[in-house]
Length: 154
Image 1 (cartoon, helix red, strand yellow):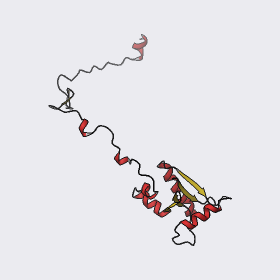
Image 2: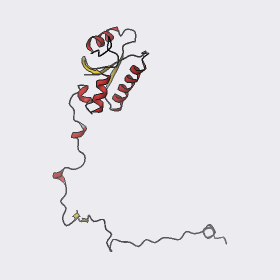
Image 3: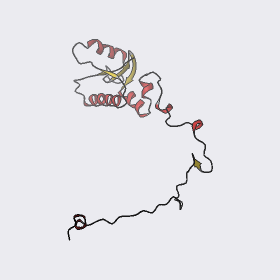
Image 4: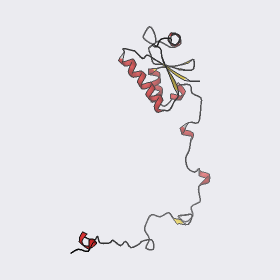
């Protein structure tokens, strides 16, 4: 199913515009595919009627955009969307299929595949970070030549 966001492209209400922009920005940042349906465009009367009949109006006579659906199943309005985003339950709110979550993905090795560590050595290499006498190397710092020495002039 496709997430549908019902918006108003010509709303004079700044709060509605801000809410619409925030919903779209969050969906974009989380790479969630969606379709924005502008209910104010000519020929979108059926979509506007669908949104009004299937959304829950809280205080207004008609529900205000943005209204969020997954296919034809109502998810909620901006406030519910924002709350779900804040508590990290956006997938649940949007009724998205339960794919592998990032919490279930592990990177690197598992406990079973770790190499054994014996006597503080892993694969024959000491895990100590201290410099031993045999590991130290003498560092020779070359003196820099002056420009005259480099060109051979005096």
